Image (cartoon, rainbow, N blue to C red; front, side, top):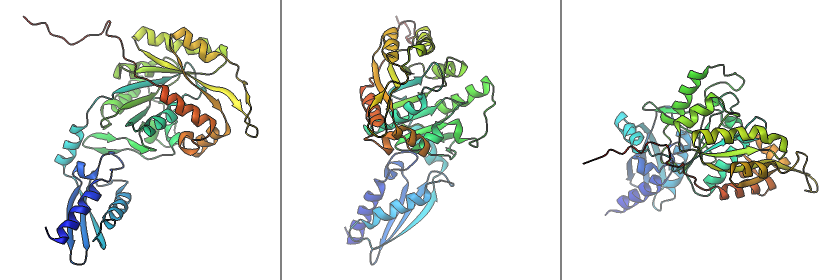
Amino acid sequence: MTPRAVVADGIRAAVGAIRDPELQRPLGELGMVRRVDVRHGGAARIEIALTTPDCPFSESIRHAVTSAALSVPGARTVDVRMAQMTDADRRRIVLADTAVPHQVYAIASGKGGVGKSTIAANLAIALAAQGRRVGLIDADVWGYSVPQLFGVHRAPVAMNGRMLPVQAFGVSLMSLGFFVPPDEPIVWRGPMLHKALTQFVEDTHWGDLDVLLLDLPPGTGDVTLSVLELLPDAALVAVTTPQPAALSVAGRIGALAAQVGMPIAGVVENMSESLCAHCGAGSAVFGSGGGDQLAASLGCDVLGRIPLDVAIRMAGDAGVPVVSRDPRSASARALLDTAARLRPVRRPLIGRPLGLTPTG
């Protein structure tokens, strides 16, 4: 093998290991590294086939490819040319990744204002930090907050009739807020919302996810029922606040879960105490005992108690979830511990069609 061929093989391996920002798979595995030529003097020319002609990450991919190629001994200069995948290439990628998520959790609350979306966003990042492939659907279609919490405001890219989820902090995201201006209200009726949620679940290229989280709207309305119909194996994570007065409202979610045969993964008590920004002392300004009482009534465990501190408030305003922005803060540590306690829960087979055909 000639010295130039050795350098070319090294460049192909280095570039092929780069992960595509949208598909979260190596460029080499996706077939995006089309040509690698090394000429006299170590001048390398590389051709990369992008998934779509309007790929928003083309420049970041170009920079990553250039850096990876120049790290190979013998490469002196790099010229990166961008091409496009064929329809057949895109179809192959879409059809290859159609696995059902291994675990699905529905983050729900009986009413608004309990910090459910903040819990969902930070649990997603905490699970991703464990090395899992995580997706998050913002199913709170009227009060969507994932774009603000993650600091992303761009529409997903479509590929062969399927949407590619937006990537942020190692999590794949889908939200109605990516498709409308920030201040525009959603005035759709039930059938339109059901169709949008169906597209989020069935027409989105999620890939091979380990965990899919659903940020449900508060209460037990049509949207919640639609999501549970689309993902019947979801397990409930009920979010509540400490005051006992919230139990009657939060308990409605548990009643809904019982009616549809939905397993309960546990309870998260948010705003368990307010922490002083100066001395760190805690104060139970929202009461106490609500999480324990709800867990007892639902027959499950309290997964975590999340304190209210300045860090979690500042993180929400900055568009960087606190688990990433300030992982040493009290709220972030509690959220990381909560994610570590989250365990798979399977829906019982009683009353479910098994799809078995008698023989003989």
